[in-house]
Length: 362
Image (cartoon, rainbow, N blue to C red; front, side, top):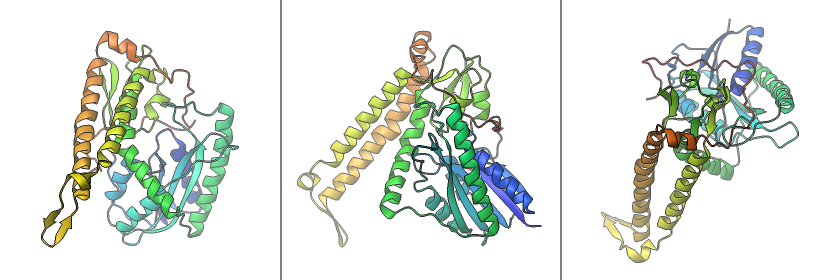
């Protein structure tokens, strides 16, 4: 009997749904299948399989940090057949679909560097889950998206079982642009989401958000959740809260937007200064470094230290401390997401993380 492994990360259940369809198809085709849910607390399996499938959602046209860490810690594939499936968000079957960006190419490259024979990559669309900033699709559109996505997942499973090779590659310019956008989100955007969350007066301290967070980014303080800078931005906590108590705070949102605006303006200012007129060229052995290059490197280091190393953590600790002050806590509860619909796949179990001592992140 052939063996297969499905490794998937899923914030609100879209990827889990697609992975479940592929699992059932593989079992019907005679495979023995092991399924691994990926989080920052899941050890990497060492067993060798005839086929390995890696599935995850698209975050800002790139791979979630959790999945990157998992892929990079895999044991040597030694030629093992592998396929990659991504899920992206749709509003409705009648609107333009989402896009995988650089996800498929980047994941395939990581797997090949680990010795895997990646023969198939493809994407499947389900419903948008970004409740924190945007309203999610209507229940009717969710149902239509699921039917369409399920059909796509079934077709993908059939092609993988048949051994059909298909590698989806974006155009070079789009690939480079999506990598840059994904990197920016990975460094700043996902952390900003955690900075913007607040639990309102409906929170009863049940701890579901903390127990189910795949990044381990949520702890309870005085019966209320607090988010740290490891937030993945997966939207699980805000969509899964049984009392819809987790919100995007308007006050925190404005603070984060102001911080990011200042950061962008500082970046532009620093990089457009005429360093070639300010700094002399520097000779290093036989090489000559221009004043423009020296200035640009120094500007980037200064910007990175000030905003990434100092200001973002300082903002986090300030907001965290302010959130424990009764008056400030009420101000933080003013929300942009209170009336937004919540989105979880109907079959998705959010309580899947058990914090242990073994982690796959290096």
